[in-house]
Length: 201
Image (cartoon, rainbow, N blue to C red; front, side, top):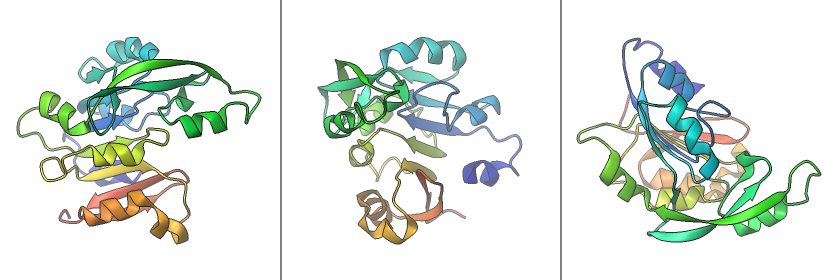
């Protein structure tokens, strides 16, 4: 991972992460490696069944069973038999339901949501720099970005789920938004874009 290599030379450094759509404390996690290195942060996950695992395996972290949206509100949350597919997007959830015989929609629940800026105002320690923000919100990633106060909270790295190829990145709202906020593309995997704040070395 690009972020891991960036911090490898800082062996005793204990950083801070924000994980939106954290899913599970170690399964498909972008933050578990850093937690094991002594880091801590805020995990935000709407799935109600996930919190017992976060509270057990991530005791240094702040674990919040909420969603992120542009304003404080309750939203319908679509739950699958594979929790990694859960999300707020009706369109994406309906597309996924029945697309693969293995995965299907089980239920919908109502989940409270807050803007990311509100969460950070309340839970981020005063003066704490955010080393990286990881977003995997199953179609709500752009909304999560919009909900942050980018003048106040500027992570060094931002990871966002995006499956477009490099040649098509100009079509990405996420790419254009973060570029306008002073971030440069630092790397890309099959499903994730990694951005680095342009004013950092």
